[in-house]
Image (cartoon, rainbow, N blue to C red; front, top):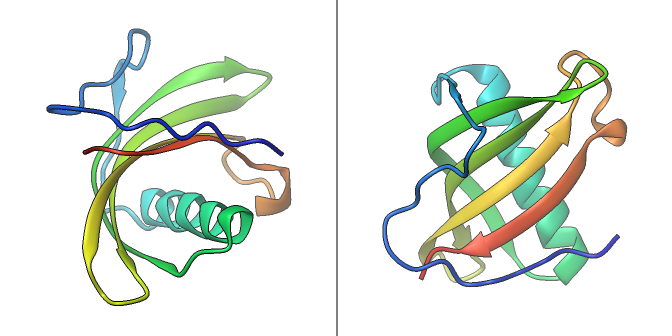
Length: 108
C-alpha cells in the first residue's frame, strides 16, 4: 500500500462531494479515526497515537462503501500533538481488514 503524504495549509475544508456531516463524538467515527492513525503509524514506522476527530464528512463510494474525510489530532512518541487530514474508505459494519487508508496529511 502506498500512502500519499502532503502538507495541507490553512483551514481544512472537505473536498467537493463530501456532503454528509458525521458525528465526531460517535464511537464509529472515533474508530475510523483510530484506524487511520494506526494504519499510518504501521506504514511509516512512527510512534503516533489517536487523540480526537474534530471534523468528519462522508460521501458514498459505491457498493455500500463510504469515503470518510476527517481532521484528526494525534500525538507523537514524545506526546506532542499535531493535526492531520485523513481519507478512509470502508463499508460500515465490515471488518477493519477490508478498510483502506487513502491519504494521511499533516495540516501544517
